[in-house]
Amino acid sequence: MKVPNSIINLITEKVISRFLKYVRIETTSDETSNESPSTDSQVKFGKLLIDEMEELGIKEIIHDEHGYIYAKISPTKGYEDKPEIGFVAHLDTSPSVSGINIEPTIHRNYSGLDISFEKNPSLILSPKENPELLNYINSDIITSKGDTLLGADDKAGIAEIITACEILLNYPEIEHGPIIIALFPDEEIGKGTQYVDISKIPKICYTIDGSEMGLLQIECFDAWKIKIIFNGLNVHPGYAKDIMVNSIQIACEFFNEIPKLERPEKTKEREGFYHLNFLKGNEEKSEAILIIRDFEESINQKRISYLEELRKKFEEKYKGVKITFNIEHQYSNMKRYIEKTPYIINFAKKAIKMADLDPIIRIIRGGTDGAYLSQKGIPTPNIFAGGYLYHSKKEFIPTIALKKATEVILNLILLYGKDNYQLS
Ligand SMILES: [Zn+2]
Image (cartoon, rainbow, N blue to C red; front, side):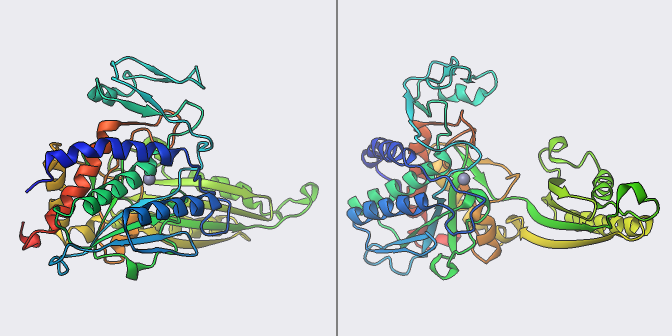
């Protein structure tokens, strides 16, 4: 059981042209906005996608007031009882690098040498720094012109999902169960699942938002955010002896007590960290944001206990200071939820192998929309979209990766359309 080669050969051109069209459309999210979605451009892009899906013949589409899109592809006749599966991607691109007027450029038959950028002569994409480029010699590679990011994160994911669905709709001989396309705004600013309607999401999902070709991710950080407020007491500095309680000075000392080797810049692979990412204040009052990350929730709990101890110690040492914590659990390591349904992982591996790739299993030192969905009872591993160096002006995607990711999506659809799918 495989998608016939004659059909697979059609994928490349369709997915590339779709991708080139999507990346030209600006959809940068905005972390300073209180609106949802954070930018109108994401709604506009959503409308364009809906027009396109309607043209393909998809009838049941919802575009809600927060810019979320849920589209349903009906099953082949006789396949109504097959499990519904969802493919999730995000509409926005990262606000960390400009995403305005992106001009995708195709570097044909990559030779293995450095790639330069027309609009940014000092920027070089080199296999010396990024040896993975050498896996794509003779393949076509798409970059921006060097003045913006490319937006393969996650326009590649969207192009791949919609192209796979186009194939299903045009070739009824590929038999399949019900499919849901779910596209979320504002993933890059950590709000991708804020307004998701869980009732519209199937019980089996995959995000198509990973990086290199072959990648499958089932594990992410357990994540906490702690807002810390230091209340002090201000008086005229000339008459402050034994009276002033300088909150910002105390805050600086407080953060110096946090283990210096447990910072993002000192950790890798499975090591967790404390990360101070905001501090502002004066003598009277200071506010800080500290985020905590680890693959083990128990280790994060120990970090939180350590902070509680530190708070007591500081309140005793500096009479008059009051330190308060506002502790928020942001997301869990999705592994413990995904592991309960091993077939979801096995099918992903199988689908990747069916596309003649070796599955690369790797942890995510961050989170995904899938982390939240998994926590809500929808196990959602992350599959490659195929791009590299996301959130940078050097971001690139080999065209072969666009094709292979589309193939993997089609393979998954085939696998779930089989009898006794859970036993496979
Ligand atoms: Zn992404």
